[in-house]
Length: 369
Image 1 (tube, rainbow, N blue to C red):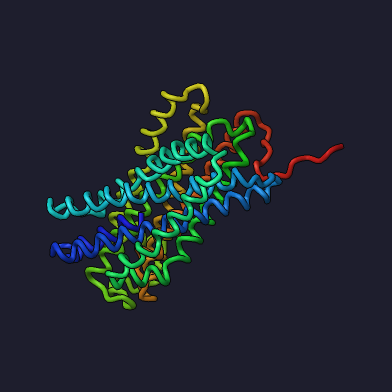
Image 2: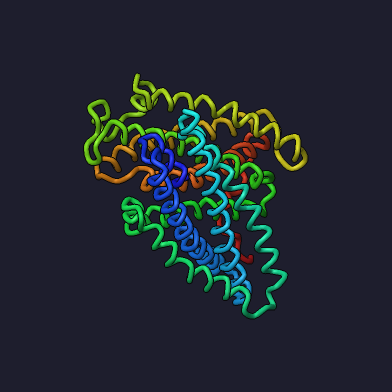
């Protein structure tokens, strides 16, 4: 998401119109993404291991090696594939006169599909060869050796150097926040009243994350065109705008927020229909659940769009690039908020259907009598 937004901003501000400058911006950003993918992939594997230990699971050294190698390799391959796709889309949109903000972040939604597909293939390969003593350590060492070369390439671009030095905290914190959503999902998988939640969770999180990324990228581009880092334009002087200002004012950003909010219900209905056709036996399809599901989607996107308006203004006032410091937080929060609201949907649906409030997935298991 952040790569798509950075490239869109660079395109809209004319930074990639010159072929030589285009090569420098593109190569440095792709190298940066590879560095971030390798580091975050390893951190994600470590976080998964720690969460497993916290939930009472044991630690198997071979499985830990498979997990780390799979995570790092998947993250790097996905970053390479998606980065190349983003470059082609942004450069092509610029040449066609189309605003890349409206296309690049939507195309970035393929990230979950590509990453999960790669993870399934890569992890299956490593698991089949888990008896090989040197395979998984060599993969980790190999990517560790390639990281300094990517850092040197990334240093061609001064803004990217700044991200290399100070841009890690938003990414790591966003990963931790998103992991909390995964923890909620993991707690619900084995409980019958949450049947189908694993199918709807990626849709709920993906829709919210993509819409808030589009809005954040648009506001960021607007500020790069009309503002100076550290100083907000006159029509955006309020650092803490009200929800009414975010959605009901005549500003161009409020107009785009209203358009994105209108897309929530038809978008979710389309995805819900597809899921119902493909998984009709494993997901609830009652009218009550559909209404609760749509309400959860509206609440999630409304909260995220308002937070995007606030976060971008605060970041800009501190002379920080919103593409790098806001989108990770907002997409991570979208995962947590979407998963939590979806769990509430299933709980409320169970209450309305049976009249008995089902047990929460976060309730402790009963002890022996």
